[in-house]
Image (cartoon, rainbow, N blue to C red; front, side, top):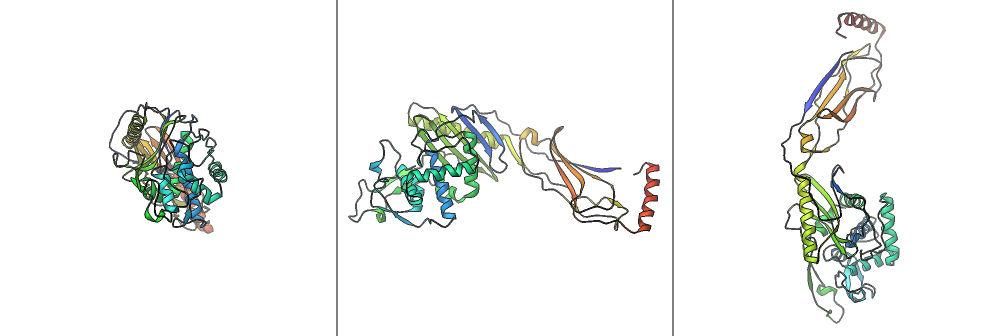
Length: 397
């Protein structure tokens, strides 16, 4: 039985750069759309996430808002536990004070921009009654996502017993961005945040320091244009961490970098930023997202059926993330037998699409019948039987 084979080739421009050499102990880079891993370095090493922990805290907040049990406009009163003077020395702070009244939205900004540990406590108490109960919610979310290496001991990231691996945390970041994309514009790309505002002050109209303007700890915001999130982190036990995301054109990349070194915060932040730029640039320049287009073809000849043609259902070919070198050799073959015999049922496989890069097969997809096609009448079947006999003799079947 003869088959029709159509070859369809995709060509893209070549642009290559060397794989980056990173300062950090552990890193991973993925394409957000396809989940394809573009780079890994010790991605399964367990390291404290430090203030990147607050991304899971914010995920829980967004989920509670989605469930209708919380709103961004809700105002809460700050407890003594969340007062900045109750926190350990050298904590990152929003500078909340007991008795102040603050919106959930501002607390979310306080978590995302100045990385306030006090804001983490205030949110945890509002949602779960205590930090301990809130942490159980955080760990439940990690478990439900199948992130076996992720464990939290607090809501802020100060505790060195918080643990993640880059490979699991990048999966969480992808889930977070895909489920709550508004977080990038509302929180993670915001460059600065000033607190307190006049409406937050106590009844006597004063605060310890007055309004304090703090800047986002992610120093790639505004300096490397594609970056629009996510969160930095540092404690002595972890080194300099960052979860990054950047968008260029229609492509979004997500990176997690853990365990960066530095003699001081200025050096550590600089080396972390260099790692981030090198990693993201490598991903944008060396990989392409490509979706194969399937050329539409006429129906194959149907023998012995109630009609001589059939409607075809083509498979959905997923977007692929490929190296530029492989993308230049991407092609597909559409294979459909040109002689099919009824009856044919809807959903029955009648052909195949094969994807190649070079000579390597990277995907196979079934072409199916889009309708039932029953057998034809007696004389139709008899006539087609005779025709098939002579076609086989001539070698044309």
